[in-house]
Length: 65
Image: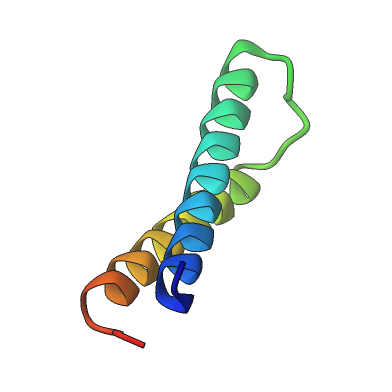
């Protein structure tokens, strides 16, 4: 496995984790279980998912190591 595919795999996993946690917290907050979680935390998780998704895309298409 090359270095490029290892990096891309890690970025894809980070994207999935950020997005999954953000959606889970958002749903649980909407149900009323996580009422103490501020909206900024959910926003930061979504922004983290967006950033890692963009980095994964750039690494796969442009940054050939």
